[in-house]
Length: 95
Picture 1 (cartoon, rainbow, N blue to C red):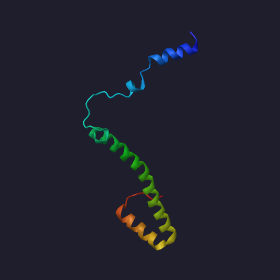
Picture 2 (cartoon, one colour):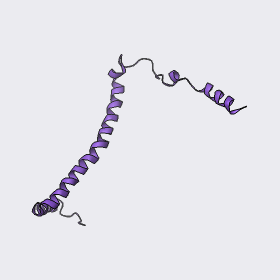
Picture 3 (cartoon, rainbow, N blue to C red):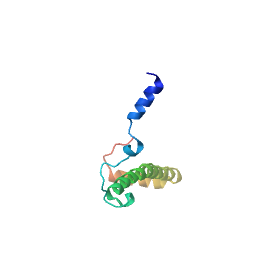
Picture 4 (cartoon, rainbow, N blue to C red):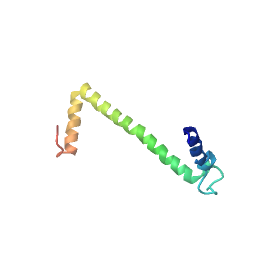
């Protein structure tokens, strides 16, 4: 059997796109997918994860930038921040 015939044979055994995309159930929870609570739940979870993936590094970078600017702009304010830190976490090891 030639490679072209094998390709056609394998392709014939694959489900069509409409069969592959069919729902496993016939009755949804709403008339439209945009109103389906199950679909909205999944979309909400994905959107939440995507938002967090973008915001956590951004907010961390902003906080580190503020600390860096404070350290280099005003040594007295930095010393006050260190004193507050030491009062809140007195047993924390220092580097």
